[in-house]
Picture (cartoon, helix red, strand yellow):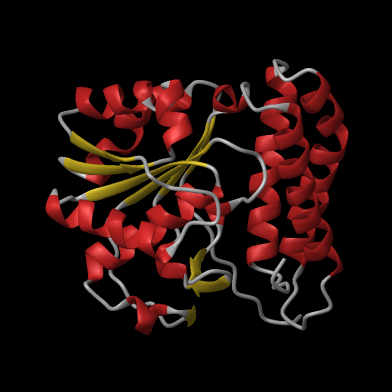
Length: 263
């Protein structure tokens, strides 16, 4: 049998309401000074509040960076890193969609290691160490919570990425309650994104594709295909939302280890 290497997030919690216990789940790992990276919309909606209170309840001082935009820019990443350094942080939480999670990954790397971003771009160039890192996705689409990849927009349109196992988080917390408020259009778009990840992972002809990735891709597509219509038309169906979130994560694990092209 062809040798394979499989890397993913070592600790995953899948449970409705789990983000309210983030302090119990990850507080010891994250330490006493935590940077929570999110976007202004989620902060305004108060979606992060329970997680912040949970961390504070375990004795953490939480600094919130809530300026992440879609397709985050290099300027935004630099501001997050500056905020982390100014607060002398000991750990990072990414809370939101793929953009917030990607910024959190690189913030943990750059603050923790002190290495220059220009040296980390590309595949397996980031050396670390990074700060302790927890990721809490609020969309079922990117699977970023279990992938070793972060994408940043440089200049007007250029996308650059860091791909290295060192930016895989210590823990991913999948809480379907956080996805209940997603509008139908976003639910559909992110769901199709996850399905594309699963399909390409399964169909990849790369010599390093493997039975484990294919198994995950099949299960992901089964969950996503069976639940996307319900999640779109009845956004309060917690079972469908949970299935979409789990399917997105499984697709992320699959495409991160197939490997696939840049989708």
